[in-house]
Image (cartoon, rainbow, N blue to C red; front, side):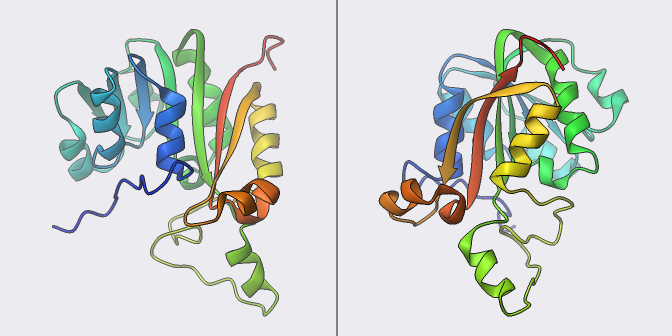
Length: 210
């Protein structure tokens, strides 16, 4: 079987490398959408305990491993969320929110599963990437089997719209990183919203609530 999801650590600024860096070591982690468990395995290697929620049954079976407990179902299903019997140091939503019907509501719901001082790591494809902007000048917006224009994406985000969603869900941005795959670091730093393939955020509930 061909692995549909692969870990990409080719450089410190890939989305996966940034997510691993932001999660850190020895944490309790709730990962939404672990797919086949490629990131969960890295979390476990870093001393973390992991609970995952995965909607695809076949992928959920593959993600389950020592140190990883997987609940099969949708994060948008309250019956599924009621199966979570713990709070966590970190919630990971890596390339997940763009697949949801109501991403802001799901992000808001994750507050209930954070330990005091806990935080959320979010990674989103950047629709404002130059590879998407350039074809738009010629009227092209072609879906693909993967990438930023994955035909399974229900939502599209720029840095500004992602930050608006985060703010409206009652969070503050602690860190932002431009996930730029195969892009010179100097360019990514100078024009992060143009060069970023992914938008990677570390966020926490605002002290003033909503």
